[in-house]
Structures are given as C-alpha cells and as structure tokens.
Amino acid sequence: MPAALAVAVPAALVVAGPAAATAAEPTAPALAPPLATARLVHSDGTPAGLARIISADGHAVIVVEITGVPAGPHGLHLHAVGQCAGPAFLSAGSHLNPAAKAHGIDNPAGSHLGDLPNLTADAQGRISARIHFAGDPQALATALFDADGSALVLHAGPDDYKTDPAGNSGSRIVCGVLTKG
Image: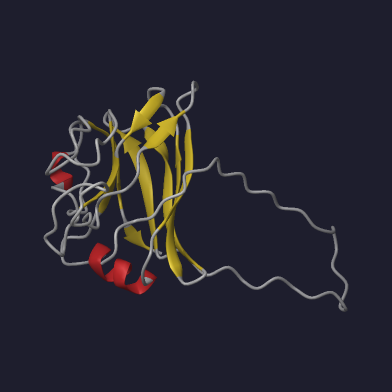
C-alpha cells in the first residue's frame, strides 16, 4: 500500500448558505459516511478529540482534531491493534505494517502504512489537520479492520522519519480505536 502523502493545514469547516432553499436551486450531494472514526483519549482517559477517515476524490483523508497536548511537533501513527489501554497505550501494538516495510517517510525503500506525518500543536495545545493518502480508500479500510483492528496514536515527540521501528517519537500520549463508519 502506498505511503501517506500529507498536507497538514488548519481545518476550518465553514457552513454557509441560504436559510431556505427554493425548488429551483440544486441541492448539494450527500456526504458519504466516514470509513472510520476514532474517539481520541489522553493517557488518563479524558477526551482528547476525534479522528475520522473519509473518502474524498477517490482517496482516503484522515481528519484529526486534538486538544490538550503539549505545544510543538508530535508523531502520529496508525497502530496495528485496535486497543487503547492507558496509561501507556502499549496495547495498540506496533505500527500498522501489513506489507512488512521498514519505518520512515524518508526511508529510500518507502514507508509502511502506519507512517504518518508529524503534526504540530499550537500554543493552546490544539491540533487540526487533514492527512491525504495515495491509494484506494477501501484497501486502507481492509488493512485497518483486520481481525484485531487498528488504532490512531499521537506521540509525545516528533517522528524523525527514519529510525526503525518507530521514529524515536517518544511515549504514546493520545490514542483512539478506529471503528467502522
């Protein structure tokens, strides 16, 4: 499966439109339901945010909203087991890696599926990002929802994009089990 290609930008959802539509106006297409959703929690079990994986223009996009984390860069990874037992979240297993590749976005042989770009929390501890995947969204969903599921994990520090197996990104500080829809 191709590595993730990411663009992390502040997400702002602006909903605008007339208060009432007339019959002559076209209606917007219905949004497809998310492929996956994860309710994110801090290591103490308090809510940390939400992640959704959606299909957009034939690609999968992870939409992440996280609060209450230290300002600065953080590694983000898909993990191989759909469990988030705190406080260390070790139950989430290693990075999701169905093709058995080495770690690292900067790896010349290519990265594995669990490798995602670093995200940066602002001074208030907020992260808002969209991460775009190359490849088929349904193939990603198949990998995410194998027999033991998957989790999305935010680490205390940034991923160095090369050190195998986990990028030296530090402890796991936020976790969410990915569920269908």
